[in-house]
Length: 327
Image (cartoon, rainbow, N blue to C red):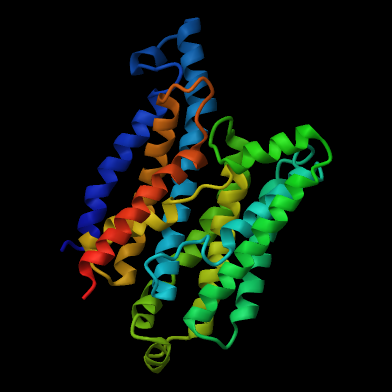
């Protein structure tokens, strides 16, 4: 078993290598030598790098990191290895809010409309989940999250069914597939502060999550303010995942997988998983984004579709591992 700092040192070079590859690969491969000079080729290369590839990379870092960190916090909060932002309704709430901005045409008139609507949807889901589960057990919280997630998914499907025109339906469907393509610095500026603010709140849950692993009563006896912990986790997730989802669309698998990939290396202490899971989430999303650009399917494969395809065999692996470890 390695410490969290050691795993971070291992994961960080992988993340940096993937980030560099993300800047260079695509329909047009770039070479570092092409950025030098004042000829038209160098100008086009710099334009592709600075205006297309770099904001896409920054968003991948933010979105992947937010999903990985949220997944680690929720797995520690619920003591459930299958927990992720989708389990407690946060992701689907953000999806519903963002879809509403597209449905009513707000997204085409105001750049900040979709992220703000996504945050509103995520916040609504959090309030509903917390309200339903108030005073109950962890199982009650999970069931409440599943109920709210189902409700938000149903409302999203209803919006798609009642889309005012085929163009709105197409835009909603495309957005639901999740993608980092065609993202600009505007998306980074709009969503970035919300994502970072949410991640800061989630990072402050580490020590309390360690105590919570002993149970709520034991954590309270150790001086942990359990309601404050839930408030930090839910508010941070609403900000980070809400802004991430409303910008990049519905992207699954990352929040579930990232903590599992680092947990065998750092152990089961929740606080030690948070930073490695954040870096692993960013690395996973960048790697998936690179693969979608390299797979030639006529039209670029949507990122959310690809991560969902990866999620199915990962679930099979989790089931097989649980069977082997079961008494």
